[in-house]
Length: 236
Image 1 (cartoon, rainbow, N blue to C red):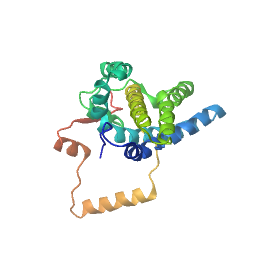
Image 2 (cartoon, helix red, strand yellow; image 1 turned 90 degrees about the vertical axis):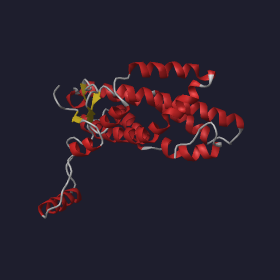
Image 3 (cartoon, rainbow, N blue to C red; image 1 turned 60 degrees about the vertical axis):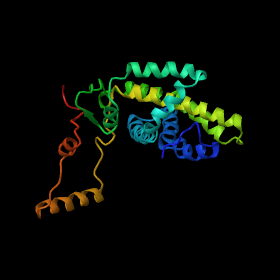
């Protein structure tokens, strides 16, 4: 359950935040920084970026439900005027819908949303490395480190207020990262080999169909939900 950050205690807030600030995106970012410093080959960067993107996907799942609550906190407190300005900048530049942003993380596109202009798979080695440097230096990671330090500090009223303020900063940094990635076409599953257990599962499903069972296509599921989907790689 998403907490009300205005009302919960610092220990409760820290308990909720702990798995978020220890998520895979932060571990992967550290590995990316090391790989870049070592001049690692392109293939190694590609593999780690896949992990980074999957970590970003999980972070988005953790944070998207509390967006309304956090933005309400920012808009209702004059001390967050600088954050409100950044939020307005994000909202003014967003091109995709909330559902479209969720679909994009899975390599899909909601009909009517713009197609990302930059295909990660088509970037040159230098362009890809530049992208990795940009992501590795994103201020989300600085905000995360400050947040972790506060979470490790002995609880007090002052710390509780600073913790909430720092989380709001962290959240705005996440929104800015989400906006940046909006224009990138990337499917983390593209090019991966099928694992044996997945192949076995497919064979069981195939046998199920042959014996008279019915499976539903992604389009059928989307239609039942009133959603129109298409692959990001489709030519427009």
